Image (tube, rainbow, N blue to C red; front, side):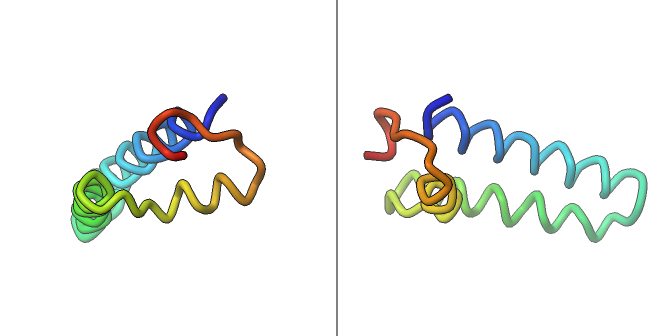
Length: 67
């Protein structure tokens, strides 16, 4: 698995988890979904992605988007 796929999989997992928590636990968890969406938008504009930095430090090899 390369870095691009790891970041996308992590973002998708976090969105699904926040939606499930918002539905079953408290609607306040939907703010996590908002935060993830804003982070994805800023990463597409600035190229800065905290998740990519963490995965890179964990040894995941770079893909074409995060070199």
